[in-house]
Length: 383
Image (cartoon, rainbow, N blue to C red; front, side, top):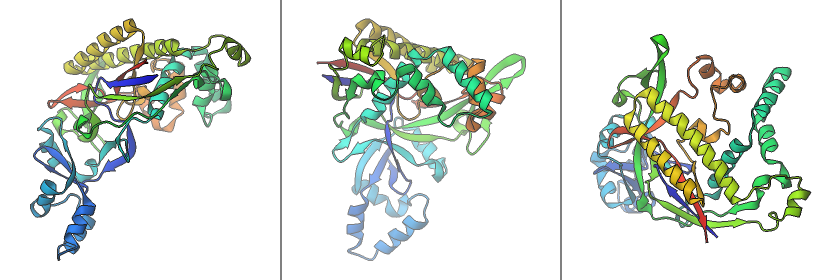
């Protein structure tokens, strides 16, 4: 069988690589990725190589006035900005904010790593199998030991799915996707929205600045740029379900009462997506971002259609989807859960503020307007 994954919102599944500001030049609303080897070979024939190497050592960005011809003639790739307005924000931004995360790419081209897909599915299934009792038990362990266990999620994950050979998700195997064309990617502008408390228990939208602080106007906040697959992009790969593990006697030997199959996995993951969309929709109401709310409502409609079709699921994955896409328990208002999170140094201050958690979101700008969230995809499986 094969799986087919379709991007519903801009999606980035990266491999840790980023384009540095000296790896590319912006020209005609495109990020022109320089073919440095070709440039070195060209300059080695004349006296300009030392000057170019010195500029690479010292410069935060390459001087277009001196080296712009390379952007025109020696680009390995030309990636368009999602909207021409992004160019002006790029030009004003500091170099440290101009490192562009790129999509996972192998020797043959860009592809979707199977680990990203299986990890996202696993998170959704754990969400469906988790219980408040598990969260309470973890909180009790934390209180009795006076500190958070070293790997707190392992206890919950193994209780929900099983461990080792008894893992409920072991019956699914998926391959990396086939490569896709490089022209399905664009450079998107993102900004971080945050919530601020106002009198009367009201919440108000603000936009984060780096390294700290926030501002009221989005254009005054710190921009980020990322290479993302455009909505409608599809990735295809091999999908296999183990017939051996599907046998009732094997499930009995593994002490599994409720054996998972693909349909059950999809149902659990769709339930996870439903709750996540509900949480994200509430955030759009708090912030008053009408276009974002409209996007989420469209995703809710699409989720209903996916459930009706019965052969797939919606799930969030990849870079920029935020804390909620990596967490199996989404009710961050739950006091027991908040006590656990407060034990994590990275989250402690945010929890102590009393504001909704997480209070920030990476918002994708479309047409220079805050309009979408990253990483929502539609997975289908068929012959």
